[in-house]
Length: 431
Image (cartoon, rainbow, N blue to C red; front, side):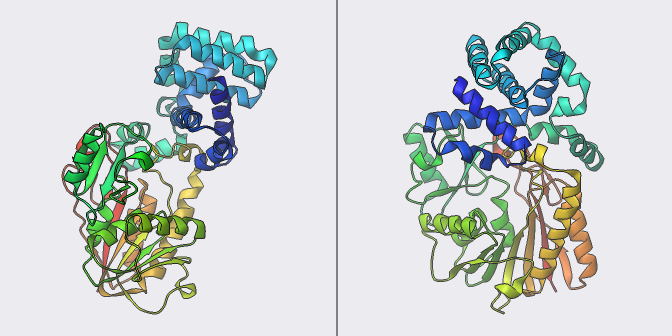
């Protein structure tokens, strides 16, 4: 276990040095057995999810700065294990002491004393840490908390708390290959518990490697959150339409559109490697066809890739802060800066304006983000519509019981029928 703790501490340190969590994990995953990879990932994700509290607890447990920094991350890993896993406390402490010897041999007794004191005084220390600051109580940066307080005065605490939950594993059934009921039976027959959710989703009781699930190789499903599954339904596509999926990678929404209707579809992304994943997903789902084109290009600069033919439907799933999906990407809470939000809004507005000229009159553009922040959502859309007299907003409707206000879906984990991320949608019709 101490090797896993040590590796996880390195991953967390890499994140605080600026790497995204997937990239930080990839640095170590190549040479690790699958069982250790999964454990390191669990420790890194969990520690970043609760970093604010863990860091405050360390401050209370130590009367001096913890050095080197890697030791602080290791202690946070161990504290996460003691509070959020079922591993025996004596094993967690002993292995953390062993891992400390690889980082700072003279600090082994210090780590032992800190962790054993925590076990003795856990309740008191946790209460003190939570009371020390909102950053410790909620495990977000202060600017993030203040923004949600201002924008959602009646909901901000629940939004923060939901972002710290473990995300579900939700499948979207490829109804060109099978049905939700049939896939549910297949999973059940193989001892995998799941529930039907939404129009074509299955929520698994326990997350697991999707590549080992029955039906994966046959293309019977994709992994897609319940909130993200709404995009294709909202866009209201029909056979024969010409459709653009801008910023398409990794292709979940692209595939869903093709599952719903026979389309002439262009999947656009500025990252050729990520676009290759789109092509691979479409092939597995048996959706790759001559009428589907995967194109490398910048959505804000159509001249470099557009063929001059207008689209009936456009999905603009634009780059954003990812503030609505932090339960899946806890590193975002610590990597984002307040100034990033205005930069995202500028990019989003540029993409929206560029794509508008590609839409046929009477066509629909669906704007989508995985953000909760108004600056990336309502303000972008309001500004765009004010500048384009030919733009008319259309209402968006979500099925019950998905919690939402207008086009903003809220992250939720309590109700298995509405366990979803926090995505935003706005539909604009071209007059």
